[in-house]
Image (cartoon, rainbow, N blue to C red; front, side, top):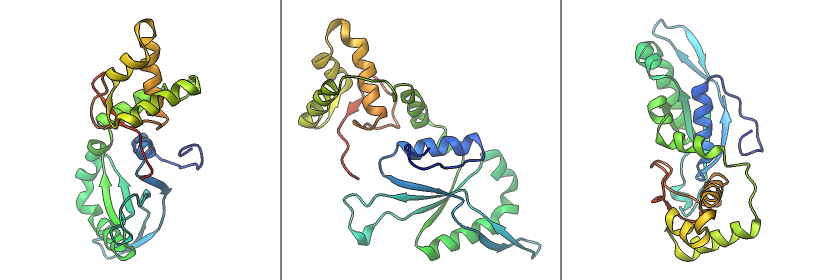
Length: 203
């Protein structure tokens, strides 16, 4: 379930991992699996129908409507496959690019180099803390501290809210707040006591 609301089907573990990354991103508004069918001609001249894997919609955030983030049509494909078959698949990808441009979208191909990275490692690590339960008042106090400070390190929050024997529990609590998106960070960087945290606002 995408954010516990909508079921998003996938056909491979690479597609699953792509969905996990998109779900974590607060900039992503929604994801539509197999959103359209695109006709194209192969090198042989025969007509075929191509169905891209996903369509990603993004939040407007602070951007103006003239500068809205374009939806992105996505094909998820292992690098070894597209490198082997790129000549054969080029006509359908050209058709997808043209179709996306016509719709006001973009078209991108994603392989493991853009999916199975440090960000995914962090998201997978944080997932084990997502369903943990902590006192709501403690969570609120942590979030208020971060709100007041603007940006603060994990180490600072541990020293302020979880002294001594409570430090281990405090680390789990902070990872929980990250996993549940009450706090945010640069997820592309390794998580540590030096990780800077901030309170996410509506994108």
